[in-house]
Structures are given as structure tokens and as C-alpha cells.
Image 1 (cartoon, rainbow, N blue to C red):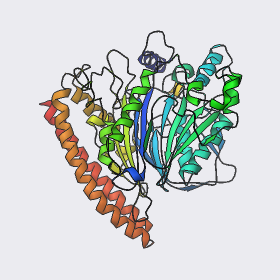
Image 2: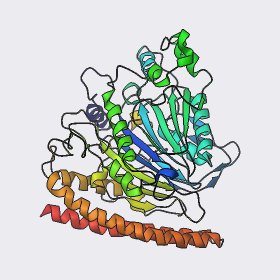
Image 3: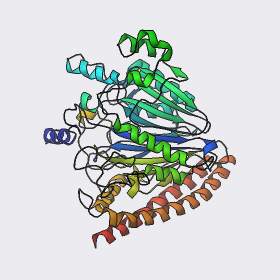
Image 4: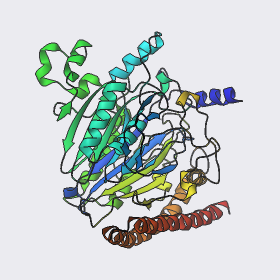
Length: 494
């Protein structure tokens, strides 16, 4: 039975373009820094696009002390644990230790992307020749490690960069897929209340660029060109040694041009990267708000010359920021989770993590706080496969469970869609969107009051009481949302 399931998974991950040897992975991450936002805070947005069965429970992990000599077992390797790890909250695939997006107790938030690089292509060729690189760390694990070990965006960057240099990142990051088909290099936006860093990793090397104002975004392509702030010492020399850059043009080195894999179609990522930058830049100075970030993450090119998808968003004709699986197989799945982080500098505010499972156009963002102590069990529950730390090639496909928040939204999304060509989407999505928009606004108004109460308790030295207030509020939002979802499903079943 296990072998049959693994074969089925492999079939579902057949490359989405004829002649290509691996599936096409997609995500989008974007940030608006305090000078560009209505809140005067940093706002980070991330869509995680994954296979349609890649359930992502929401996990909260408290600050922890660790014994000397303790190790941390990840999907492929073990690494030394550090004495203290910081509290984090994040969206974690059912088979994975790490996060697709997450935040820590100090208000550092990170989102990551797969990027298509020559370093990965070279490693894949070596693997096929029987000389595979040693397996290393997955991008999702590096993301969580950065959050657990970094008090600032710069510290988290250094954690990830040092781990990449030491352990590398070879190995499948996709359940049921082998290393060549399911592997990739990673890029990140790492941000706190004051600054953001774009970090791009290629094999065991890395490069980073700092942003202190305005907006920026990344997608599934190297984006740092001729200007950067930090990098591996041999980032240029290695490209020259490999024949990817002329030795006589080191002074005009273009990282993206040197390291990008030209055999992966560039249109797969660049249009989405430019669309997110366009939407964020449409707002004038200090006008990007959390709801605009949510609108950006829900985009299907609606206000462009394309006027959105030809038939409906659930029958995509382009790779859009809000991703939907296509019967033509040119997309590789759905948006599996979507997040908006609000990161204040003032101690009069708390960092907030607005999160929804599944494509955000049919999703409901709820506010979550890393200052809380626990989440409702349904949020952290996977489907029938359960939550584990499993090497992706050995993972099995997750399946629906009514006890899983993620699968409840996946079922809702499928009902909105109606069938594989989205026959019911144009009718049902506006109803769901209107209902959820009202609920999101209600939660936002309530969250502000609850946050202020928790801040006052923390300042009074009552951190446990503050956590209890936040826990109660998060549970209330989940309970109210479940009732709303039940009502929507009943209306669609009529």
C-alpha cells in the first residue's frame, strides 16, 4: 500500500512542462517598510504555493532551553542545538520541521522561495551521474532556524547564511518527490521593524541586499543584480571558475545573470515578481495597509490588460500570485497558505501574524500572536498522514480530516471551485469573499483592543496573563470562523 501511494504521489508530481525534468515550484514574498505603510510598521506578505495535498498546520513553539551537547534531528541530517531557542509561530508542512513562513518573539518575520539556479542544475547532474552532493538543510528548516536563533533580521540572516555555508541545501523539499525533481535553492525576505534583507542562496553560497525604505518583492528567480551589501567571499570567483561569468568582467558582476538557470522558463516567475511590485507601488507614500497586502496576495492580474483569467480564477491561464491548480498541469498546485505580518517597532504594539490556509481568494485571514502560549488544536493538526519530521521522498500524500483547519479550508475551496474547471467559482467566490471580508474587518477591530490589553499586562509584568488573553481571543476567532464556514458549506450544498 505504501509503495502504491508513493507511485501515485510521483505521478501527481509529473513535471508541468513536457521535456522538463522537475516540477515548477512557485511562491511570492513581498515587504513594505514603515515609511511606506499606513501603520508605520513593517508589513510582510507571503504566499506559499505547494502540491494540492501539502497540508500546512499552524505551529507555535515556545522559547526553550537545551542541554549541552543536544542535537536537532531534521529531515536529512542532525545539527548541534544551541542553548536557547526563541519562541516562534509558523506555517509548517505536515512532513516538515521548518516553516514556509513564520515570526519570532522579537518581531522578526521571514518568507522564502524556491529559485532556479545553475548551482542546483549542476548538483542535479552530479546526482544523475551517481555523485550526488551530501544532503543538507531545507529552505523551510533554515527559515525556522533563523527565527529561533536571531533577535533581528540581520542576526537571522547571519544564522541562515552560516548554516548554508556549512551544510548546504541539497535534497528534495517536496513530499513524494526525489531530490532532482523536488529540490531547489532558496531565497528569502528577512525583516524586522526597521529593515528588510533579501537573501539568495546558491548551493553553499549566498548573497544579500538590505532595504530600509519603500517596498520590494521576490519570486522564483534570483533578483539581486549588480548591487548588494553582503555575500560569500567567493561568490564571484566561483561563477568565473564554473564558466558562468567572464573573468575580465568581475567589476560588472551581475549575480542573477550569472547564477540563474536559463533552461527554466523565465516567465514562470518574473511576471509575478513584477506584478507584486506594481501593486505595492500603486499606493502613494505611507499608503500600504494590511488589507492592501492581503489584496495583493489574492491577485489574479485582475486590474491589468489581461482583466483576470479568461473564464475564472480557479481555471488559471497564467501563473498568478494567488495560485490555483490547472487541469492543463502548467501550475503545480494551489497556494497552500498565505500570511501577512505586522511588525511594529514600538513596545506599545505586538507583532501580529495574519494567516489563512489555501488560496487567499477563498481564504480567511485570522490574527495570531507569538506572545500567546497555545493554539486551538485544530490549527496544528494535519490530515490522515499526521504531523511528523520525514524525509520528503519517504512521505506519503496527506488526506482530508475534519479535525484539520487546513483541510477544512481545502474542502471549502474545492466547493467554491465546483469542479476542475471552476464551474461554480464565479458564482460562489463573491459570496464567500463578502462573508470573509466582513469577518476579517471584525477581527481586526477586536484584535486591536485585545492587543492593547495584552500590552498593558506585559508592561505590568504579567506575561502569563497577557498570553491567556491572546489565547482566548485566538480560540474565539477560530470558533466563530468554523461556524461561518459550516454555514457557507451548507449554502453551497443546497
